[in-house]
Amino acid sequence: MKVTKYSGEVVPFDANSLRHSLTRSGATDEEVDKVYEDIKTHLYDGITTRELYEWAYAALKKQRNSYAARYSLKKALRDLGPEGFYFEKWISRLFAADGFETITGQTVQGHAVTHEIDVVAVKEDVMYAIECKFRNDVDAKISVTTPMYFMSRLKDISDISYDFFEGKRNFTGGCLVTNAYLTTDSISFGEYYRLNMLSWNYPVKNSLKLQVDNNGLYPITCLSTLKQKEKTDLLKLQCILVQDLVNHPSFLDHIDIEQHKKKHVVLEATELINSPLYVDR
Image (cartoon, rainbow, N blue to C red; front, side):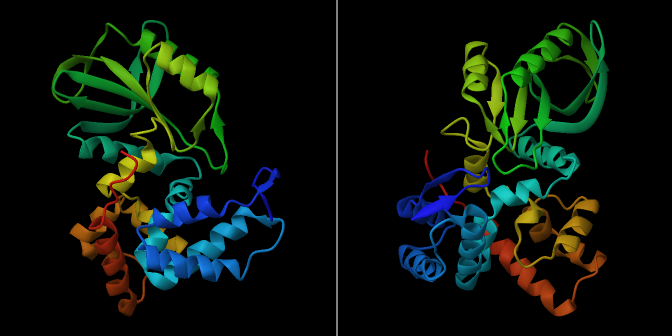
């Protein structure tokens, strides 16, 4: 059987790959078997990856909402668009969870030109300029010109003192972050020049996906019990992480949502962050 990818490329169906992705939803082996049997009834030669995702999502949701939520992470990151403003907010929260003080949307004067810094992150003697590259396309890749450009920006703001977090500080480095993939050339360039880069699947043992799964730092857009408008309304209230909703369920009192639905949303949110996956380390 063949599967048609988003790009139009036709590839062989890989049952083991599908089972692995289902397992990473947090479902047990027995639950994965049930989900796989459910999906098999909908398979046909040439099925698209979009359809395959939708059937898998629906089957996981039958088992537990939090499984579907975790499985949808890649899509949930795209839902932080369309321009990536909330993606920057989310990245800021990821660094904050690692002990950094963070601030978004800053403009600084470099040696030659001014620069808009998506996220400034400070911890002890370290201050990073974080560049966020948000992509809406499912299979989008960041070409080598992006880390090249990023390195030139870091050079232009180096050796200059800036006022951040009540003190004079210099940028000690930076980090290029994307919800997409990095091309082979991008990775080679970044590794040669020792650039910090973080993408959906890079670095292999500390990728964006692994950091989220291992630490429960899911964006609010993951939740399967929320409609798109409800997610958007929560983002506008700066409810960025699922953890925010668990800590402050009162966020739901400020959006247009059915009263009886609130407890289901909070239950899913609690299950999701209280069962992190420690995988692929």
